[in-house]
Image (tube, rainbow, N blue to C red; front, side):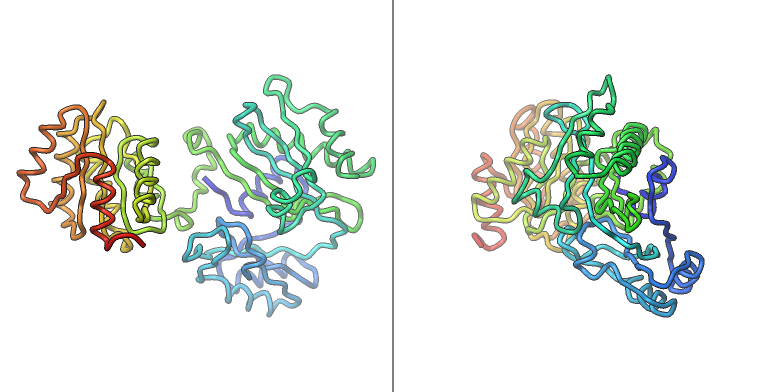
Length: 388
């Protein structure tokens, strides 16, 4: 689960991480009121979306009067912001954050993720903070300092000092930086985060450090024990992916026109690969799971056909824990309920495969059978007009 900047900054405040104060607004009038309350003579109006690259996409507006703040909020609210990290049609802007401008002497980068290779939380920092940190990581990775935190010992003083020296901070700034690092580590572990970023972590004109931006991702598997789960913003999520979660389906929207319905993540990846190899483009990743039911298969079909890009469906099932005849029942149920109007190619293999194929053949529905995965991919690509 992702948090908006204003939500992440409220957690920063709870943990004593210095920020530049700001207030969220859901209307131009509220934006103007917030600017007055915050004081100052210049403000930033920042679109609150779950996507990076807002600045370059016009999602951060500089305003020098209360009227300009209201105008900037009016221009952003109710629109969809398209960034290099957003969905193709952008993310809806329902909230903006009003923050006074700050005098910035230098921009740093600070982040933390779970490093699966070392099974530790890894902190990363760089002198090259700001909007182009991704390019820094790709082209000059030596400019990024990384430390791993032992889960038994926790973050150590020497690690804080090491990062501070690498960033060229003076004595007082290193003390502030150490406080921020320790607070971020507590926040990361307390709230079951999978990622936290401060970009930029600014050195202000008076030498103090402050988080000018904030990004937090929370591990979905731990939401049941986190009160901040109520902060989830469904409007920022793909509707099909949100519905899939309700039925324990693993679904990711892609940009192709051939939908996939598969049991098993590895088999789903292989299915997408062979569609590409055969000249097609997968429209989604969809793993219905090893212990699926006819009802879940029916729901998966409903989600698939809700995508207007889908021109054909490839069902690839290996019956192990789940029997092929139960999958066949789900396919028949779904096609009868939804009224599927695109070609459907089905490849079944494994437990009760003959019974499953018989059910499909006797259903009277427009279903094309396939002997193996290669045959299925060839048939489904042909159904959408052949190779692109």
